[in-house]
Image (cartoon, rainbow, N blue to C red; front, top):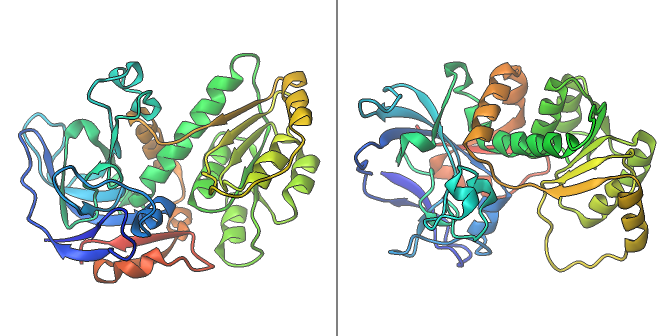
Length: 350
C-alpha cells in the first residue's frame, strides 16, 4: 500500500512510498484511511526540524489528523465495518507517570509518551492503518466530509475545558472571548465559543480570503486592527491565543478584563527576543487575579467533546475550513502553505 513517509531530521525526505499492508494485532481495528489533515507540526517534520521515527527504522509514516472507515473489527470492540473513526494521537508512557496512569496522557509528566505520526509510532498517512479500539473515537456518518477536523477540534475542546476549570476557582460567568489567529485552531475555538453562548471576537491580519467570511458566518466579529488596540477596546474575559506570536501574547495578557483567563495554544518560534514590561505584567496578573496557561494535545475525553461539537456545527461551515483537498499522489503540494489556506487535507481513498 501507499503511505506518506519522511525521514525525521532530514529535510526533503518527504515521499510517497510502498509499505507492507498492516496486520492488526489481536483486538485492533483495521481501518481504511480516508483523509489526513496537514498542520504546522507536519510541515516542521517534513522540513527536518522535528519528529522521531520508530526505533527499528529510519522512516516514519506521517499524519496525526486522521479520518478513516473501519474495514475489520473484532467481536466485542464496540465497532463494526463501515463505522467512521478518528485515531487518537498520543499514547501514555510505559512507566506510567501519575497523569498517564489516570488517562490524562495529554498532561504526561515525564515526556515518555509516544505519538502517532510524530514521535516513535507510525501515523495515519496510509491507505490502511490499525488502531486499538480504546484509541479510536466514532464519528457521526454525516461528518464524512469534515471529520478530519476532529484532532484540531480536540485540542480546542481541551483548551476550553482548561479555561473553565481555571475560571471555576471562583465565580465564573464569562461574556466575551477574543480569539487571536484565524487558522483552524482559532476558527474552531471561535466555533466552540459560539456554542457556549459567548460574544466571540476573532483577530487576524488578513482582510480578504475566506477567514473574515467564516467568522461572520458564525455570528462572531472579525478584527484586523493591532491586537493591543482591539484587546484594550474589548477587555475580553477569555482569550484563546492561537498564533504563537510573542508580541500578540503579551499584548493580550495586558488587556483582559479583571479575572481574565488567557489560554495559549500557539507554539512560538524560537530565536526572536522581545522587550516588555515584566513588572507591569506581573502587577496586572496579581492585582486582577488573572491567569495565563498553556494547553497542548488532548486525551480521550477531549476527543469525545470535539465529536459532540462537530456534530452540532453547520456541516457547510466546517467544510468551508477545508480550503484545499489534495490526492495522496500530490501530497507534497499540501506542505507548501498558500495565503488563502485555512486547512489543507490529503485524501487517501483515491
